[in-house]
Image (cartoon, rainbow, N blue to C red; front, side, top):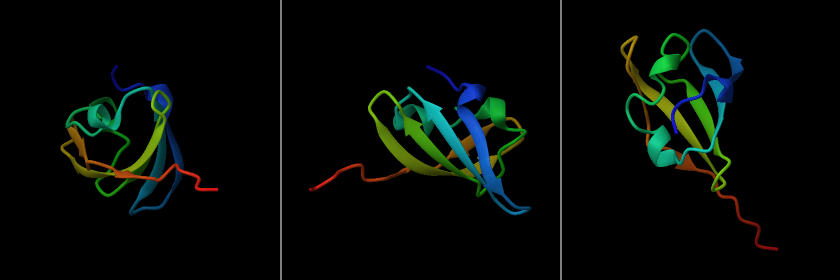
Length: 87
């Protein structure tokens, strides 16, 4: 699949950083590819944090915006949030 604007929501922010939620059926390997968030380049800033929820797998990852040229957005590989329950 591809980026879907309806999946991206701003949760909180300040002048230096924003926190976003992104819900998608795409795996983190697709989401963390350079250019995936290009259509959101006018909203995302370097150092913004995005909580990516893959509803297909399901998994959740934190990614940060590494670069944004104004047209090309690149995010980090992602840090997985453990979704296990040992009890």
